[in-house]
Length: 101
Image (cartoon, rainbow, N blue to C red; front, top):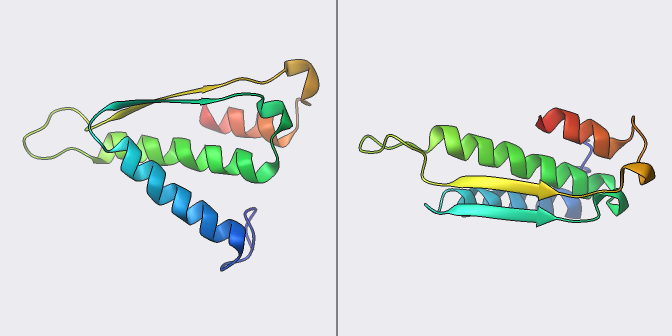
């Protein structure tokens, strides 16, 4: 089991499909801006998916170089908002933010 659920679970399949989609979006050759608002209301699965999104984008940026290119094919700017008075310092959202830094 992972934090996203058992292998074959709906959450695991959704996470995998989103991972594939994020990878395709980030490697499309154009900059991408992704805005996620009100993250203080998000559940652990949503926060994990955003963390996967950031990791996928980082991999796309570092591994998408062809022999002719000197720069990555795409780039990502992730903007997230949350109310700091509605999240705990040791909660899952803050843990994921620390991992993204």
